[in-house]
Length: 528
Image (cartoon, rainbow, N blue to C red; front, top):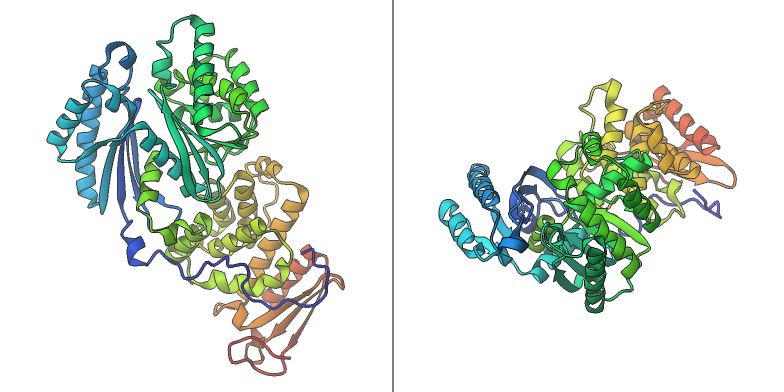
């Protein structure tokens, strides 16, 4: 869009955004279909089954039970009796469900409460005898590694410190270059903190001293902090409530140290029961939030991160990441998810790449991040075609802003949603969508609308693929958009196509011209 030259750009793929052939049909990747994980935590027991054929996996099944295995563990040294009974009952149910789903693999991991309780091994034996499943009681450093791998599943380029807080422990791990570095486990879980003597002063001292020891182990120079765990997600949801934030998707929600401190201070003046009713946070979870906030407040002081992100991906996603081949780990989760959705839901799989090539002259000099969003939009442009025509554009917007897509921050979600919406029609004054547009600046909104209208033209110009029927040439200095038609495809440029071409030109602020190529190209691109 911001080109300095009027030399036309050929419609060819650039920068490796397609990353070679799609991998979801590869045998090593298809083996990830229906991968199950049972996570036996100190506060909750959860089973997740991933439809893991894509780099950004879908949740085929996801069920959680708040058991509180680690409640009173610091005092009694044993698993909470009621929590133990509920956990066993839940795992027995999960075992039956897993058998019904014919999973390709099922991994059960137990963390702090089971590994630290004196009756942890007897609980493991009881579970295994009742279900026939193996329970892996993992050490704290392994828990930290798996949680960090879960973050990398959603953020391939993530660099910083991962902090995973559970009921009975808190783990830290370094990440960078798509790998996990130093890692350590601590007792800074809310259940443990309930037993710290000395009141508020004693608690603050204990947390601060422990964090300083942890900093000595994992380093203190980490610009970004990635928060994993239910207590952090609850805090993020409360931060959204305080701010009146319009997009309540927790994954990749960004907070600043200033915002977090404001929210912690605000929570001290609020009725937690009323907040729970407004936000949908469970009673078991919200009771742990005040203690978790005290940990985070001191983390901001001890580690001094400048960027804080919420990750919905953690230990369960880390188990899936562990099973992914390196070729899949290296892929962009957003693009691979787009490919998978196109292959399974679009009318003409493969059309998205052809449209991307056709529209390439409009994309000169955009950033790498903007380019990958455009690529994703091309892949996703038709996956909502089965929605009712009156609501198709809104359905497209929801796919981008609400779907489980990795590698996509909140601004990216809204930008992508606006592109897809304009692929079908102008959004108009939609009261539901207008607040979300505040996450974008005017240039981002204008560019998203332009890409959407370009896709609107490209999607209907030729069902065989627009790049086989014509070529776009864009001259930004002359403010001209030219369409060169294949001789045998010139009749495709009918009345509706002309109207959509004119709409695109109006958005660009240019005039249009079109002509028929002098000769027919063997591959579809016009010559002359």
